[in-house]
Image (cartoon, rainbow, N blue to C red; front, side, top):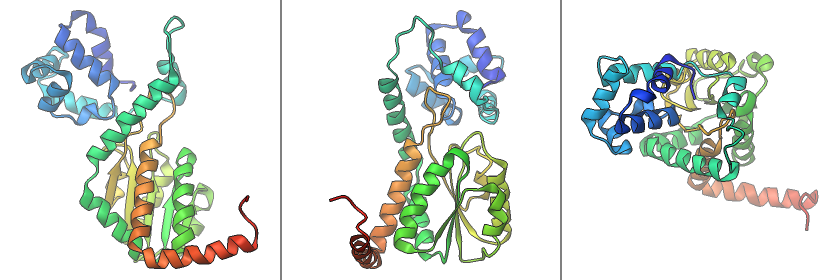
Length: 284
């Protein structure tokens, strides 16, 4: 949920709405990260109303038409609630029965479907190609996004031996000292975005280094710094973001890279198996 006048208007005016308008408002209030990017016709189809009803809904909310409503919805994405506000908003009432497991699993199924529909196969293939040809790969991931960065860097460095994770903002400058053209930066960033991620991306772009950005929507402040951008849906009914869709994308990137470099990767894994046996790493 987003703290914004446009959504407050919908809440305040629900008593005046027709049944069809309530369906539109309910959909937009529930899908605050994807709703702002729907065309009037697509929103009409998803809510099972006529396109003219969507336009009338926008006017009833005090906007000149759907384009103005859409701009207001997109602007609201940049005003995320604090974690405490989000927690309060997503807590069910005392009398309301809940099943968090079923609720959040269903939310993640929706996130995966939305993410898959938003990914351009050509952009995915280009990202894989950039990862394969990069001299060194630097991964930027701060705060909760560190979980994604650690997973990606672990497997890439295991097989490619050229990957470095930057997770501590204080040491960022030292890590990026030797970065140069021919290297690649993969940055993770989700609302609420950290300043350090944006500062680091700005710096590496000045160095003419290729960048891949994995974020949550097209209005993310990381997007202008990405040569290749992926938008992954992270919204669930909780104060936390869900990383189910981003980790699915990460899995796909790792798999595609290793399949393309299968001869090199197979040789590396065979050598690692001997090493693991020598040090008795795994439980038998």
